[in-house]
Image (cartoon, rainbow, N blue to C red):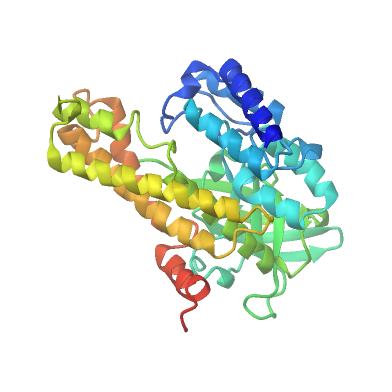
Length: 396
């Protein structure tokens, strides 16, 4: 206990001295950091905070120190999270490299792959995207048809991925490919690492109803991928794919946590600005009740996530519980933005124009974007099936 107490005291002093003032405010959706070669930082202190935290290894606190991670134990990592939350620190780095690929490489990658890729992920130098879904293989992911043919020291890859989040901004893609078309549906699939700058790789953004282009189509045309970029065994990629999806769903579950990017300011502040206050409370009782329920649900969800984290101290992988967290977090994020929408009043009805607050215009688009949470990373229906079968043990 004394060791943890000492770590807490040292961490508190370090965060106070090194976390810039603007990094202790709610994170606007356009100021998050995913790193990468093409990263642009609207707020310069975002990059300062990233560099300071990555130098400590605290962008990935529990990853091994030999790759640049923090090397912290579960108790220390929890203390770090608590101390960051206490002063409102923003997350210094997010993205698929941290939440998905890194854990998979630690479990299935070769030492050469870990040495090559993990330090760059930790420092935010390389941004990764995910090449899973295809036009004919979404929720039925095992139906993928992107083909990779082994030709000596390389694979020749041809195919078409879709809903590839931020592919146009990413440097590399981890990709599921079919390496044995004659095998059973869930077999004959392999897991490759591909550079987005290689000849034959092309990303095309898809404009969403929100007006953003977060998702892309990714085309792979005669792309030569070194055989050393295979993660795990040839034709055994489905096992890795399932593990990565567990990490993805666990990561998506984080959008339900306090401090996740939601709006330009807390929802209760937006509500007070819009409808006023009486005795320090939101003046509209119906809106006050809606926001109170949202905040209580968020707090309960955070306690559940913490309980699950404490239960995983033995180092078990996320497992089917990640489906439960993913499902509830996406529902929570939707109701959170609905509360933001209600709190903003008629300012939230605009799409463009100088009469509308730019922050409200962004919040309206984010409200629309939140609907996609129930699809990405496996639809809500898929998560409910997993929960029914693998968590509750119900019959097929």
